[in-house]
Structure formats: C-alpha cells, structure tokens
Image 1 (cartoon, rainbow, N blue to C red):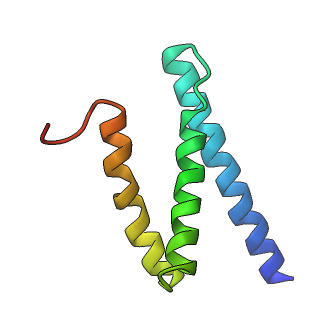
Image 2 (cartoon, rainbow, N blue to C red):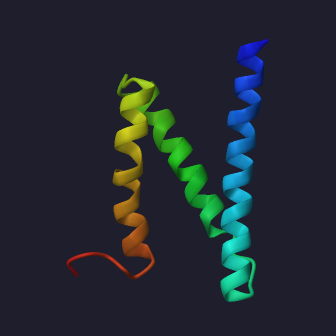
Length: 83
C-alpha cells in the first residue's frame, strides 16, 4: 500500500512538472510550446537505453542522462556554449 502511494506521488510530481513548464512558457510568451514535452520524452528514452543497453543502475542513469542530453538540446536552441 505504501509503495502504491509513493508511485502515485511520483507520477503526480511528473504531471505537475510538465504542467508547470507549460504554464511558465504560456505566461511569458503567450504561446503554447510543447517542445519541453519532447525533451522530457527524450530523457526517458535516454534513461531506458542507459538501463537496458549499457546496464547502468537507475541512479547512474539519473545522474548521467540529463547532462548528456542537455548539450545537444542547448545547441539546437541556439545557446550552445563555446560556439
């Protein structure tokens, strides 16, 4: 029962994070931009590949995947460091 409650809180936190991202973007720009959802999915897929193909633990994937995906994401948005 406690595990189910924890899973519900984690799932709700993910939904809240996505909703907050949409609200901030809409509040500042006045447009609905769904690109952050695509990067959220890209991070989940990267973590899956790290877990499945490379055999990393969940915590190692949680630490390694976001920085590895942040670099190409920032360069796609035109704010890459160093160039």
